[in-house]
Image 1 (tube, rainbow over the protein chains, first blue to last red):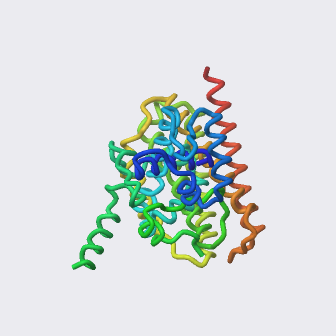
Image 2: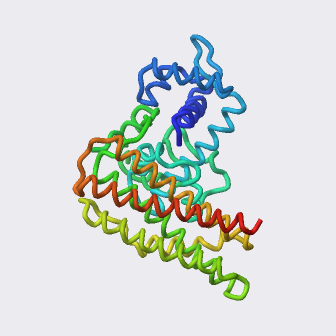
Image 3: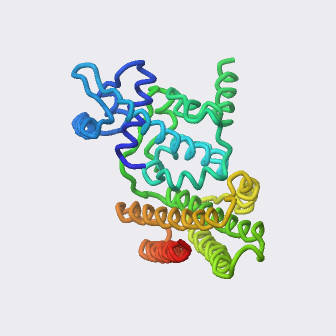
Length: 150
Length: 179
């Protein structure tokens, strides 16, 4: 997944969390880059018609940007699900974030042939937990957290 | 050492992602090579099943040879990747589990005709080429030392990439000859 796709996906998820434009600082934090770098990429996304930036409010995706973000999110879901279900990786979220730049949609498409992905994808992706809500590992973690609370 | 800990995502509600990619540890390298093994297993299984389901009568010699060669080559690639992982300081997923998963899922995505078989093979070869190319780039971008000799590792991956490039050319040649 290229850098622009990682950005539009991040903006898409932040817009869901914030229920409005994504603040540049929050985006920079999520992407683990400086605010200047985030601003530079936002400018590139604007020039490609994928995002709009409003001063003091933040960045929002255009309709075209949303389509691209959802494709990127689907690729990301495939990576998470593949790591969790096929390779049995416990920290599938951490490793998916690491692998994301090197797994593009073509490779994800092949991995997708051996996983059971829900038809709801990518709407099943929960931006707060950074994971597909149907992944068993999330259920296991939720149970663990509930037990700990008890 | 991994850059992103699970705790960050849970505590802040805003998880971080990395931009660009470098392979920095045996663990990361092994994970990538495992993905390579799965991709090769998918190629092998699909080539084998295409051959089985279409049958010798409905496939001409050129396509039979193509599928047979693809299955053999993927098997060999997988063994080479497994040999590298065996020399790294990591636990590996048993190959049989991956094989069973690929087998179980094949029926849901199989191509239905010749054009589908050739296109599927082209997609397989292109995907594997792109994957090795990306992994090589990610290793070259890093100055990390692995348990396995770096140059030996890169040589192996470049050889695999080269064979995938030959595969893309071969399928393309056959497809063009049938237009």
